[in-house]
Image 1 (cartoon, helix red, strand yellow):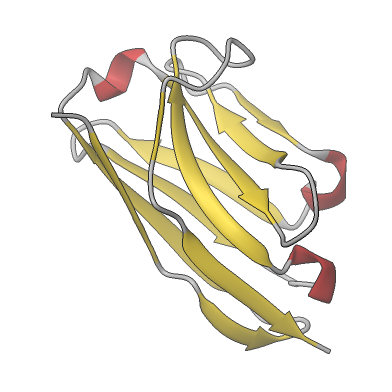
Image 2 (tube, rainbow, N blue to C red):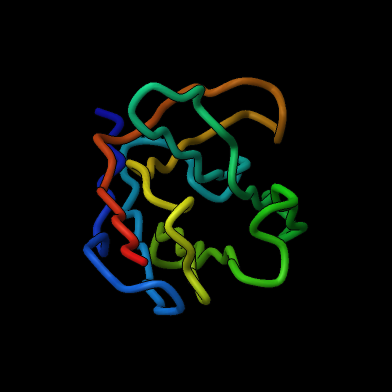
Amino acid sequence: QVQLTESGGGSVQAGGSLLLSCQASGFAFSDYCMTWFRQAPGREREGVAGIESDGGTLYEDSVKGRFIISRDNSKNTLLLQMNNLKPEDTAMYYCAAEAFCGGGTDFYGQGTQVTVSS
């Protein structure tokens, strides 16, 4: 059974940091592109960052230089270090697995809420 479980969300002030974690099970984690996407109320889903199975990374423009995505294939874990958070980063954050980055979401978790106050 595929499971993706996010944790680490919370409420912070602008300029603060959070570390999101996603624990995966039930599929060949190391073979998949893993991504983070977010969705705020009334807004479209937005891809935030992705990391290929070989470790290559890509970021949405608004988070470049502030967010770092990483993975530990030995622990089936995906991380998102978020620094210098801004109120516009407020959203539910989800981790997702794709056969290849940009190929469409195969699995995703329940999400973790991030709220940034000004």
